[in-house]
Length: 197
Image (cartoon, rainbow, N blue to C red; front, side):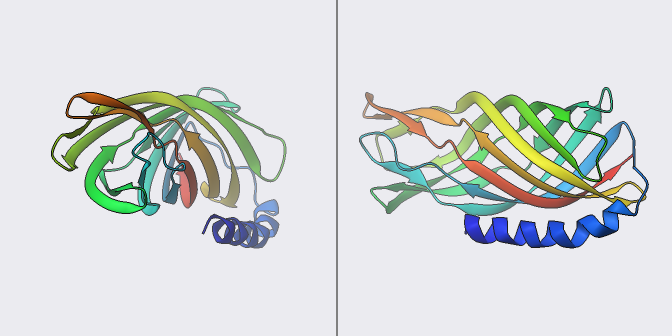
């Protein structure tokens, strides 16, 4: 799935860049994007071999540019329901709400606008439905690393490709006995459009 997404992004970017090169540089302190995001979780962890399913989900992000190069980005979505698996078999579900705030550096002086970012993710787990005696922590805080590119399309509109690695982890216990740390740690690959104001 990831390989197909990367190939699609490459084709779309190749199609958009020639048109973007003919456009004047769009500027504005605010940038709002809507993206489709593919969540690819880490391999199973803990002695229970816990994992969650991969998933496509919608997200909205808002960026504020302090300078042409420096911006803060806040990524938002609504609580996402995920299957929880042990050794590949479904054992329940939970929801997670994972807002992420990043500080980014945007490169200028070229037709497209690549950027890199470092930030903080806070995830809240809710609606946890697991077998009796199995419990997880309800909050996670971790680093987020990202990179992407905005392709100006004129009149403030942008095409965006973005990839992030996010640390999402929670402790797992069975009948009060610790069974390690559940490392979700997903790679988030997204495509979308944005508008600068």
